Image (cartoon, rainbow, N blue to C red; front, side):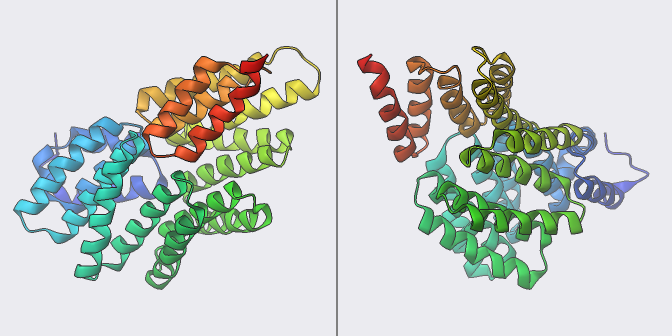
Length: 336
């Protein structure tokens, strides 16, 4: 229950402090106890509650809340709330693997933000549409969207958004094997996040940078980076980044085990299995697809059942190129 002595303004101030520090568990507990009509009536509290749902891995709840938030904003003609609800609904749909629905919501957000001249939400829409393009394997389009967001965030002095945009640019460059450019963008993201004391984006960046080191065949560095990301994500109660850090650490551990000549790599597969459990518990379909793929190749041999599940999940999300790549990897094992 909301404490009537403190009022909504005090609740907003406390929610701001918790969000700024990245204490998502405490933020969720605070607003989950509040009167839901109070939360929906306050654009600040509604958005903070949605942030807490996202960062604590409650994607199904987030999708339901975003729908209620959208209805409330429409009823009160709250244009800012409407834009935020579209953004949040897209985020929930994307994480749950309904990428087509996410794209539709974000395209509506992009168009409405342009009409309303809301630059911050326009940048968010561009960032998110870039993520869709990246998943679909269209790196040039993804980078165009991400780089559209960068100058807007710079002009608005929105440091969190700027760090997120650099993180997205880095991930896309990494996946395109432009490693040096990716490292520079990762460093930009971390520098900005450190300047404002925002640990969640630092943890995300460390996990993503660890995957770059996997691609550069340096599992020792990858494991060290993933360890740091894992500790930070657990401290802030962020199961999505925790799952990603576990996934990458698992890959690094299996690579190190192979290099040392050990026949088994239980430590690595344990991390991957933990990441898979987190993915399923939170409803994060992309993490689930990635982890199934990595588990399917982690034991030194192809495991067709896991790889087929992964390919099916990627295809359902529109990541057709990745699905085809996984199936192609299975072809030699089918011949033996």
